[in-house]
Length: 290
Figure (cartoon, rainbow, N blue to C red):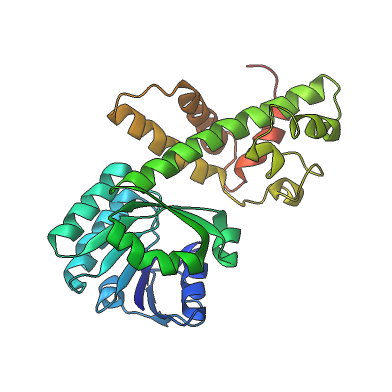
């Protein structure tokens, strides 16, 4: 396929490179980041989108997505697919899809899970909203960039799935860090804590696959001084999106709201920006009950 790829940062760059390595013709554009090997640099987002079968975007937020979509949609060929892999608010995803459909295009919202490591290794999971036809068109590309793609429903459903997933992740990581800090103060060895919880009813991805305690369980950012696999400020962004979505449909999310407050304090007050989201553990370990 001929692919336009807009947004070549830590996630988009490796994704575009994997598509090019698989033999697709990829034109990329980013205001700052360099083009990865095999990707032709376009002069603008519009240039990258012109004549493409699929245009993929990986952008910081919904406002930027709306701006980029407004510029590239008029340049795209009829029948092409605009596939946004950013994590943005559901309203922006649906607004962009409506604009694309009105222009004779198709659109997908396809946020990802798996982080920078998954983007590089081609093992991402895609949560996809949009038509069955558009999903079928882009599925071969998802198979290159990731290990799984789930069609979640109509436009906006991919973002809804991502937001709900990460609200669970934020809350479970927070309570996992709390539990380790409590175990410390109760005199319980962290390795024994892991051995019990990882095979008992308290097990979770946060405990079993991404343990926040260094030297315990599989390798994780905790073993690299909490250098981010998934930065705390990105978790805060996703948690805030979850609360925005909850407010829009009047859904009670008290645990999600508390997790949002914890990460807001950690990132914006307590120096957590630039650290992994599991670095709540050393924070809790050095603080008393508040």
